[in-house]
Image (cartoon, rainbow, N blue to C red; front, side, top):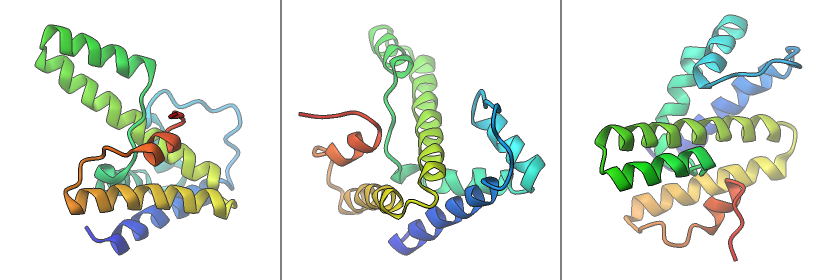
Length: 149
């Protein structure tokens, strides 16, 4: 993937979610990403395409750390349980994808927030392309709602 392709995929996600703004979603709570994608598929007919687009940029989105994810990580590390480690990885990815979708949805109409999302994803892309470990991940953590000293 190139930077241009990453930007196009982010914009595609924003376009899908912009269309969703026209629907009354008050009171709807999605229990997981799959239920969200099913809703999008039923309402707009693009849930499968949205899922595919989000998955394509997964390596370049910031990880979201939650209490549940941290608990899974500690349990997996303590027990050296490969199944628990796989579960933890999936939980990290799903919560990170959900956070990205929610952040993009919230940034619709707010160019500054949109540019912040794009900037963080591009920085992660650059780090990965350069093979530089993400040792200075302040931007990634800040985007995920975690503050660093």
